Length: 455
Image (cartoon, rainbow, N blue to C red; front, top):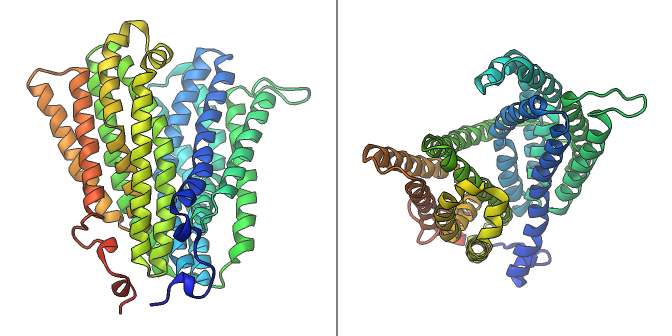
């Protein structure tokens, strides 16, 4: 059995597993946080223009973010394949994966522009935009669509770089993109000197220009490192598209369930809807920290599996799971310790009585939620995308059944809704854990090192 340590210096994880996990996860976390913070800045600028422009920004940003999220499979799939190729010492295969993923990103990006101009008005209307709000939303989306190829390029390049365990370059690019975006916001929204005031369209123009600059920088980095491949293999493109199908269904199930919980909470009244939104928004923000560990685990698991070293891949899974649970405990404890201050910040006074019980349920489940996230990353690293899709299907069917059951029983309350959400999270985490420990089904991490190499 040839291990990575036989021909070169051992991977840092071998000697310092905990330090390596944390060192790789920290820049990922910072890069993930950069975008939502810039979104808050965009909102603050546009809020000065009035209610209609702000509502239009919400409609346009929500619509296009959902569209771009669908294509996140390009980055996830590229990260796994590149990590495994690098682990196996196959840089030419890594270059082919880069070429295929970028080509698909450009093709899909152009398609988004073409289809987007046809559908942006119906989509904005479907989200309730009419009159002045619709006009502003069309102006925003019409400008923002031109950045679609750049957005998908950044998704792919960040996946490739993280597959190489370079977590810092995506951070610098993300900070630069968001910094340029903020500067251009100040110049384009209200105008400056000879620059005309573009209003909501200025927000979109700022984002589009910043993302194209970031995409050019990112492309330069990965092409210099790997070189552009002499030829591409259609079979490898089919693999990425198959991953896309599994992740598309999984994302659709996840999004659909969360929308149903929001609907259930909102139908109880304005106070329940407000309390639920406050808890849900913090839950989404907290997910960024958990995602950082998942992305790191994905790269390291993929690397060691590419090298045929299942033992170390399982060790990565164990260390990442331990830190994720620790982070979940810390997060849950902090949520309860600072509950009053968070409630004052996020929840209206008349919704706080409903907020606290739901907040407690969300805090209690954080360690299990952390396991659900990190095992997602572990199984992304093994390429077990179909298993994750099926696990999400089971969890979502159970969750939807739970929501229907409490409605049918006439006991609907925000507490029961969050009990169902906690159950949905527990099912996801359970499926994630048992695939590794003990390793049910065709679990890659249950194999021996020799079996991985076909020995």
